[in-house]
Image 1 (cartoon, rainbow, N blue to C red):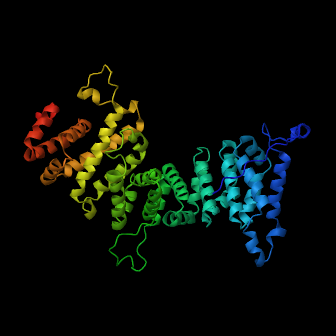
Image 2 (tube, rainbow, N blue to C red):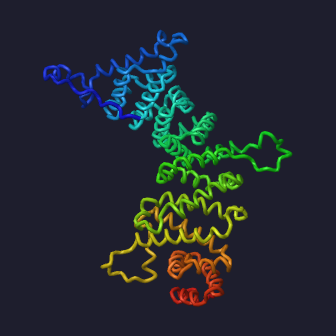
Image 3 (cartoon, rainbow, N blue to C red):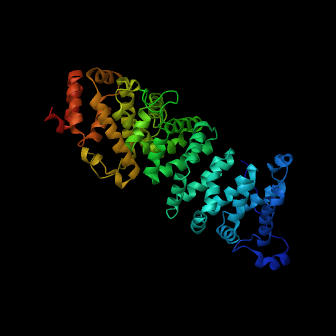
Length: 472
């Protein structure tokens, strides 16, 4: 979308400026008179005389006069100023925009009107006023059924702004709950749109909704749990078909194709789903979807994010998406280990990735070389909460997942890992350093297997971690 034109410049004539001094909006140089004119023009566009045209004029109604477009775009730019936004509110501009959205068939005009409301909603007082208007709320939610991507984008932006205001968030959650068709519209957008900007913004709306209201998340998860239409429920042995998760997956794939770094929001949506049993079931009980999600996340953590040739500091940029991705993988791994796509041979690449992220975390947390602290095993265990809360969350997720994989390792897999380097002394040391002491039984069982595979390596590790030797 092209950048909107800049607001009109102030008059150049000094005498005119003095006369128009009382015409300025607040402390700005924007003219009240000019703005009245633009809003009056909008009223004319949706007046009964103009809307009762014949079918021959429908094509003309879909287009916006160039001069009017330029002027209303200037209002769009101006509305980012609080003085202008408050003046628009005082002049009842939201009612005018509501009339346009209810009557106009012009996509560009609808987009701009929602965009202006979105800018105005950035200011709390106006956001509360907009949110308390039931009729306007209905019209805005109806915009989610629009077929125009720019209008959908601006509507999603407006909704996200309102959902982010604690004072009115619950109002919008309830309105969305009362309109089941919004679920269908959002699923359709996620599953079919190729507009990545729109997909990211819709993902942010879904993420915020699920974060605010677990009940709504459960309703949406269960909403798609229907039996195949061609089989009666009593005769079908198939698992129910979940609609929401496949739609999230399709959106994530589309976003990844353009920029993997934008995947953060969809990874977090999936992570929120795994916090409730129905959400996990919605993922793992759809064999194809579960497999596709596993493969997507497996590929991201093993081949995309935090790779061996990346600087350790990259972890600071990728910590939230990695935390979500590993959390979802861990939930799938723990709940559905019999699935074909969770074969044991995939454990070694995951171990390699998990340890690599932990090693990068250690590098990020290292003290300067001239630090007076001794480099002991105890001082390496820096309390990450002092430095970065998100890294602490990531570490907890990594350690839990790594311990689950360690418990599933067989003698053959350990031997393969030692041979291929995924379970070298350095990597095992990094793993132990993070797993101990909370996962001591898991490490002890692993050491027992390692003794059978490579006694020298096991002995070296026991020397580095004396607490293990007594109990093995």
